[in-house]
Length: 501
Ligand SMILES: Cc1cc2c(cc1C)[n+](S(=O)(=O)[O-])c1c(=O)[nH]c(=O)nc-1n2C[C@H](O)[C@H](O)[C@H](O)COP(=O)(O)O
Image (cartoon, rainbow, N blue to C red; front, side):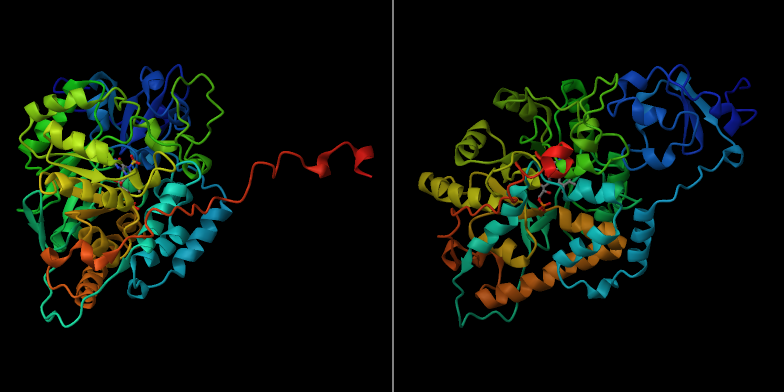
């Protein structure tokens, strides 16, 4: 390195390859080399995944999980070794992977975008075309995924009581959320690791939200950096921040103040994830060794049993409690919403604590299995608030299992201000990129207009509880998976030979 620290000679692949062990571990990311030897034991994803790329180019593995500014933020400058002449880096020989070949073949036959007529179509295409690990991460729910299925199933227990001979020539689906006008009563909710599904990540959702004038909630665990996502927004576009509260409150305060300074219009504090749920599909999918090899904790002191998200979320503070709310109210002027509230008692507590809203949510069924659906909790909450005359004290949102405009209409009839939608936009983005997100939002808009016309409401304010019949909502027919307990415990074929006769 000459005096002004520009690098005279680039490092070569050979230089890096020499440092391929835990005693001296160098990796390449985005064409630059880093000495991560001392960082190995601190890596939230465990040291194994880094050692897999010791002396090599780790970019492909690094990219979906880490925002681009991660190394600048967390690795001391002295460990930044400079540019690598990538022509001297040996290409990893591609191992035969029949799964990958089959996936590429399915991609070559995937339906054209216009053949997607509803949000479930995007899920079907994504299931067939996404990388196994990415699909597993997005689609998984906790434990037996009962709540994940119940989230959408619950909407099937609500029926309409449509009114006729209402002038529905002009339909207006616009509303406001936290004071921001938007064209539709749904927002793109926070879902982590957007680059697992699409190399561009969350900025695709930003562009889709802009086109349809809907609001985007930016996840703490985004693949893109927070500023990248804000920079991808256009003037006047509304974005909210979803916050996982860090054990180190100074870090949290910095994030919140930066978000406010950058113009975020809402702070959604996630309160249903003091620990991330156990998502077995994500664990089974051999998520690049970061999380799935649950049993193998060889020397690692990191609990990596919940797949990728757990590996990068060990910072979340499980001691967060109501006593912290006054502090949050003191450090920001942004409206504060508690995301993941699951019973009326906590909605009352939220109102008394002075926050501006709640999201009735079970995290898309990814947290506590057998938690009730957001829509069922909404039906419990609103009558109690109305009794107290508190129905307008805060804004109430729901998310989980919203796949049709009829789901949105049911939620609004029951008193929600708006709904959050997660997986459908992830699947649309993963399968078709921005055009997919654009079409998914347009399909919802078209469905919304038609269904409001058919229910007999010309604008959002006309949606009310007399238009729905919720008597079936508290019936829980959990379609449990078939009894797996005894299935593989005893296999006669492997018993002692003589006994088998
Ligand atoms: C699908 C998905 C959801 C995640 C999500 C990641 C994925 C892939 N992640 S997670 O890694 O921790 O689980 C977040 C997250 O970062 N923060 C959060 O508040 N909610 C997270 N959620 C929950 C999300 O905000 C909604 O509550 C949920 O997605 C709504 O259900 P649907 O997907 O059925 O619309």
